[in-house]
Image 1 (spheres, rainbow, N blue to C red):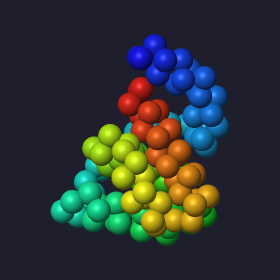
Image 2: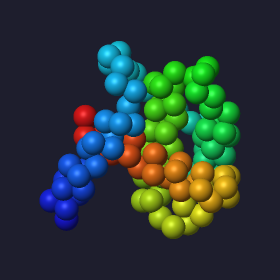
Image 3: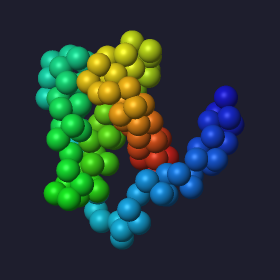
Image 4: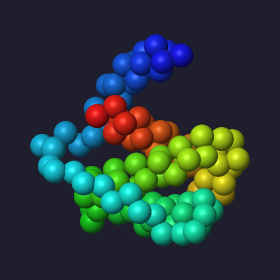
Length: 113
C-alpha cells in the first residue's frame, strides 16, 4: 500500500507545487495548538478561521498553517466519514469538498518534507 501512496503523491506533486505560491521559503514554524477540548470544538475553531480567510490580508503561510492544522485534526480521526460529515456541516458542499482536499494535500505535503 505504501507504494500506491507514494505513486499517488508522485502523481499529485505537480498539484502540490501549484498549491504553493512559489515564494522563497521562509523559516516556517507551525503552532499546532488548536483551541478546544475535543474534536468538535477544535473543528469548529478551525472551520471558523477558514471562513474568515481573506487572501489579501492573510499570508500564504497563515493559510497553509490553518489547512495543515485541519489535516492534523482530521488525521486524529483517521479521515473517517463521520469526520468528513462533521466538516461538511460548516461549509457549502462545493466549499467543503475543496476544504477537505486542501487539508489532505497540505497534510501530505508537510508530512513528506
